[in-house]
Image (cartoon, rainbow, N blue to C red; front, top):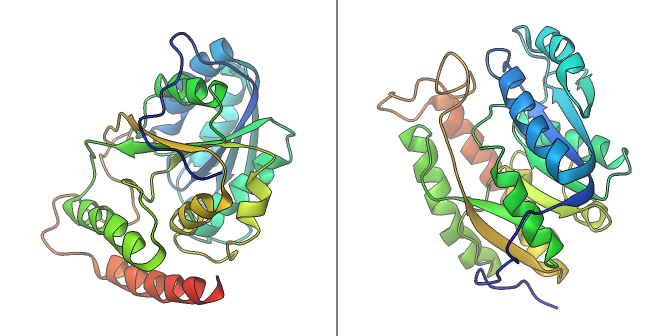
Length: 263
């Protein structure tokens, strides 16, 4: 079986799953994560039998941990909040969140970042495709609210993966992804624990897995909270690509070459 084309359509009506665990990496999201969790909780309470929020805090320097404690009692779902032993970066943290979410025993794993740049209502659309037989559903951000340099990097990724891996996907690195839990471990096991861009590697592995996949348009919005961008790369209005991002891209490219050789 090969990945299905994007014309694969779900049935009309509400999408539901029996149980879902959300894998959420978070770093310095104290100003927006509470509202994001409560928004998602309302949707998940209506369209899933049981749900968990598995938030892995990457040693935030703000009040993210305290905010998570305060919002816990407001959620219908179960909140599992953990903190990395050391600051590890987004890639290792999201992998940690995936593996911890699998431990809940949920039938489905939904990954979304803690910056709240996706709309909770789109979760139901992902679930509709899952009900229709997709094992993997990933989002495509048609309009992206991010600094210009991140848009450039994201725009270049599809060409790079088509060239290097013969993978045809429009939004390679989208952090809004739904997986059937029983197929996810085989994908994660092939991703190095220190991967800087795990979703790029997972996209390649998904394509080769033979499981039915569909990529769907989803809404994207500015980061929730006091500022429209987080603390990782700098101001959205910067005219130059941050040096930290350039170093990241160099290291990620080296990892990608090593991954290609390992396949």
